Length: 507
Image 1: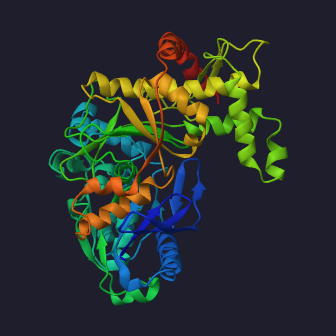
Image 2 (image 1 turned 120 degrees about the vertical axis):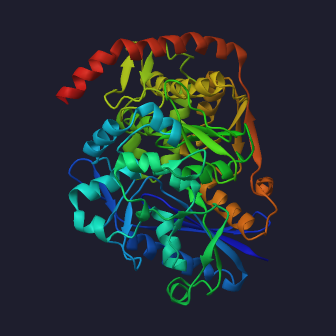
Image 3 (image 1 turned 60 degrees about the vertical axis):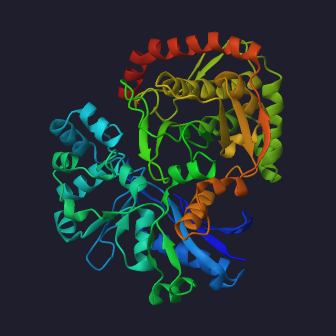
């Protein structure tokens, strides 16, 4: 039996998962590392901590199987980071990760040099300090010596590839998340690089996600437990690996991730660049495809906040280590509340909003509270509000010609049966429940590894890994009720925009 090793480099830790080539999950293990948050909006991690977690988790998994039977290793990794390494591949500073938003001044400089629409049409993204481009600009403007010594700027998984193989490369999904790549050409954009006033030589070569970047060196083998010569396949960014792991590997296939942040994405042959720039686009791992994506800041996170804040019985269940029972109680309370939560709306903007609002000043709001409303009504309003916000993202895709009739649902929020049905009724699509709810990214990386070394003919092998266990269909009567509620949901946001501006400035 041959195996594929997938590393998912997240914000809190590295999740290493071993899959057999016949689609079985053999074992998974996670090693954590620290996140350094400071100055309000700085978020950094030590790249060597990533490497340490990869080494330890690899050793743990290679104790389960013969290392000689590992056909390849590949990666899913946090995106939109900035790892500056010198000519010897040594990190020059801690990595600025996706959550680091310090480069607002550089964002303004970039806007002065290129129009937002031109930038969006080239890169598939809005100008934002969340992307790698402005982070490298910040290093240039504030740490000139480090910028001068930077041989290449890498992302998280690219750095681990460097440690394993000695090669400094990236691939299209992570390159598109830097906002320095021409999404159509799949090459670095001279126009954008010039607008950023960056040195193109500091960007690594872009190779295919399914390419073998190199093989494990002797030094790396002794550190991590893999055999020297084991192929290392590039893999991709975590959001794009999730597309592979949910079967969104052919035009039109779509998925919904209901995690702390939540998004809808699908596989497309062309980017979706709508007039309002509502969504954004990453290069897909599958050559020739892109993944349009609309992400809301606080989807599953809204429910977690509501449960922790509103549920007085929370502490009792936590003390008994029975958090699962708490969520069973939550679901029962939501089921007891009628559609529309007795006229209560929730705007799920607890962290501002990306898609579809793109308003960092937006606030979370309950609208319509009365003495009649109980905890179950408020929790239902939260679930419905998240679903309605996601429906606005889906409408953009449909208005641009996408035909999406079903969504594969993943993420922690997918464990709630009542929320699954609410999503099916609000979105007007069937919701497919896969056999794995939180393995999509690692599964996508493993499949990418298999395609890269020829163990699989193509990405359609996903059917060997992914099984649909249950489908939730739209209740047409409920869908009609939600259509009326959605209009009021939208109206409430626009009615409160000036209030959000005021509250933002005094908070």
